[in-house]
Amino acid sequence: MKVLISGGGTGGHIYPGLAIARGLEEEFDDLEIIFVGTKQGLEADIVPKAGYDLKTISVQGLPRKLSLKLFKSILKTGVGLIEARRIVKNFKPDIVIGTGGYVCGPIVLAAALSKVPTLIHEQNAYPGITNKLLSRFVDRIALSNIDAKKYFKSKEKTILTGNPIRPEILKKDRSEALRDLGLAEDKKVILVFGGSRGARSINQAVIGLYPKIKRSNLQLLHITGKQDFDFVIEKANEMGIKDIERGNIMIKPYLYNMAAALAVANLVISRAGATGLAEITACGIPAILIPYPYAAENHQLHNAQSLEKKGAAKVILDDQLTTELLNEFINDLFTDQEELIEMADASKNLGQPEAIEKLINLIKDLLGV
Ligand SMILES: CC(=O)N[C@H]1[C@@H](OP(=O)(O)OP(=O)(O)OC[C@H]2O[C@@H](n3ccc(=O)[nH]c3=O)[C@H](O)[C@@H]2O)O[C@H](CO)[C@@H](O)[C@@H]1O
Figure (cartoon, protein in one colour):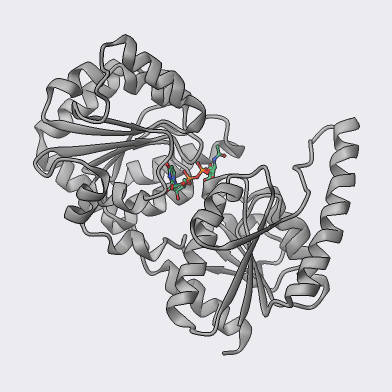
């Protein structure tokens, strides 16, 4: 069976595609999978590292305003559509799956026009523009959140599946993960990450925690995002925290082994992207969430509040984030372990580890196998 998966731009769109690929591999023996993305998106780095072939097309997001840039983008999308048609014609997929990001536009459209079965997956309660446009052409629209349904005209095509998690995330053993990461067995771990690209405001507030964490019996695994890594290291050096791989603080630009990080985390501090939250809850980790304030329709605030309401997370607004406030939250949570345990239970209750199975069943239905 040949499967073409497209999703790109940020990790939140790519990892659900990788989860589907892994899920299909567990189900089918005779499988050929390729991914389609752009050279500029994070997929160009992540997908080959995950062991899959990535074909690229030239496409870029359309600016909302009338401008020369809009004209150029339309032209590029036209070229992308020709490239996408060629890929579909040559690869002859049995199904094409889009997991969001503008790169899915040409490839899923080219497949639908060639009568190849198509499925798109929407991670957010507020759908992305590409998925909204594609919804008219595709066979099925898988949703992570039922709130997204109202935004799609073809409601009969929608089906609630949840957000698929890479199977390795659910299987990772904590002791093995601690060894993989080089962290100590006897200290609790706080995992910090600002989505797939990092978050400057979170990094700045977390840097302020270093001196205290250094002296505490907590360990900090701080994933800064590639852009901020040098800046964070410089600040750490200025604070005299040179031995960054030892004194309770580990700083990384990006982690390809997120399964290990999630297996060891006793608390997560992060943005509130839908894919990250699906992983955090599937692993039952309590969280302090700082939603990205400029996400479309403020959907990260919506994501974060739905965890907060169920007792799985604390929410700090980006403009109120300070080292002192973070410190206070961390102190309270690690002093009152009972609350941390309750939050972990609430988080676990929200997790949907079965989402991957639902998606695989949907794919099987579409293929009639
Ligand atoms: C700014 C913005 O609009 N962000 C959107 C983007 O977030 P973003 O791309 O940041 O996605 P998420 O936070 O949802 O997920 C991050 C993903 O990257 C992985 N990861 C992260 C860091 C790392 O070092 N290694 C690693 O593997 C995580 O395990 C997770 O799978 O897509 C999400 C899903 O459509 C949306 O909900 C977010 O609102």
